[in-house]
Amino acid sequence: MHDENPSLPGYWDKRYASGQTPWDFGGVPVDLGNFLQRSLTPRVLIPGCGSGHEVKAFIAAGYDVTALDISPVAVERAKRTVGAALAHCVQLGDFFTHDLAPESFDLIYERTFVCALTPDRRTAYRDRCAQLLKRGGSLTGYFYYQNTAPDAGPPFGFAWGEADELFSRYFILTKDVEVNDSLPLFAGRERWQERRRTSFKG
Ligand SMILES: C[S@@+](CC[C@H](N)C(=O)[O-])C[C@H]1O[C@@H](n2cnc3c(N)ncnc32)[C@H](O)[C@@H]1O
Image (cartoon, rainbow, N blue to C red):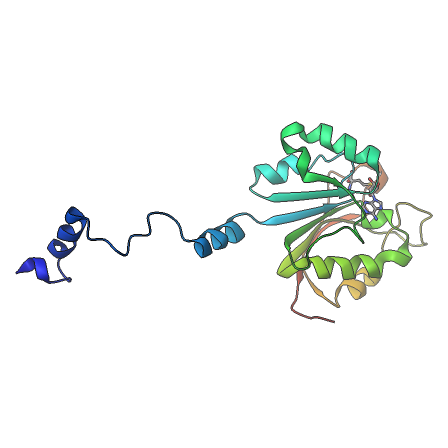
């Protein structure tokens, strides 16, 4: 009698014991696999990665890393830094034109890349970041600011209000703190900033 009531464990015990389990997938269905992949492996883009010091750190923290540099020498160096097993994470390419799917990154990590570009390319940098980040994704890292007169660069520092105005089209500044371990070149003029991609399409 108890064996016919699905509210009681005996019903299920009997099904398992007799192998009558037509619901049992025997593994992980594809959509769940995709979901877990998406939610557990955030994707980070490191444009202008230089020597690639951060690539290993992001991988160790659970990120799927794409590091990009336009200089073959830098790419070679970054591949050496990360080692043969992770060398595939480092690619030769131009941030502005490299084949990267829109809205495919959770994070873009910035360090001394935007300040290496001439200021006339900043709007293109912002737009490219906005294009590549998922909604809610983050443009995060170190941003370099000038004191008063525009610098001869690189590095080209932002004026404070200028950066806010530039990024506010697509981003909300969610964190802004001073940096205490800057290299002498950037000392006192570098901020750690996190900007969240809004849903604005432009
Ligand atoms: C000042 S270095 C910074 C390197 C690295 N981010 C770091 O913190 O050590 C700027 C880097 O950006 C690269 N770069 C310049 N223009 C680029 C572009 N359009 N796309 C990708 N990389 C670029 C340069 O080759 C160089 O390695």
